[in-house]
Image 1: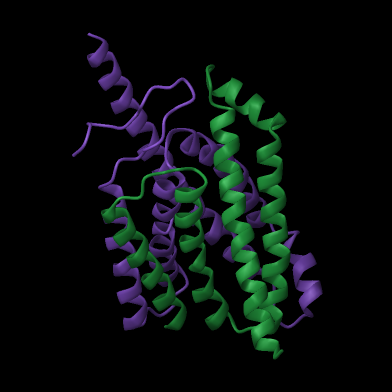
Image 2 (image 1 turned 60 degrees about the horizontal axis):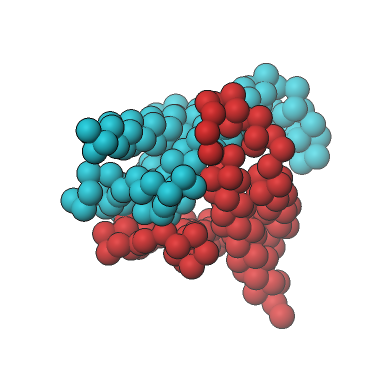
Length: 121
Length: 150
């Protein structure tokens, strides 16, 4: 496997971790939500396991991203990071059962294309 | 009566989500710029690992870290009220604000392709902001779908 392919594989895994981290944060935020004001929310977040998992996902993502940048140019790695929007859209629909209506899909598509273009510029 | 109470709550939820998303963009942008300021203070003549250590003695880096911690709590509040597939793509707006600010502050060039990309992000965010911010049931079982089906 060439170094470039290895780099792209690592970027993909890094981005997947980022999306999973967001999913864990969302799960934690929902769990910490029921009742109480902001102080209660903060206290519950502190003890929440999903939030801890989310933070670990972000740490893993940072390490993987740093590794990938040693193998790839930013001009390749950055557009690949727009994959995060794809993962978030699919995981939100499949796991969180969010309804992604037509307009929201269009929005995702435009943002994905826009980020990829910035990377190529 | 129940309905008016619900409508009030829904409007309030929406305001919280929008305020939280606005704060997200502002804090993300300021954090990115502070980080860049911190790195700029370090001369690029030294070794990479030395430059990392030198960056840690720059106050701007701590401004960035503080902003990220505040942003974490703000983000949790946003996510407790809004869909992930609504809130997360909207944060792409910070690509636009960071690009705008860095071309103004650091005189970084904006190529045509970049401007097209930024406009596409703006359009995408506009499309997403037209959808309802929450499509799942809350834990208490009340639907928060706002202003019913637009």
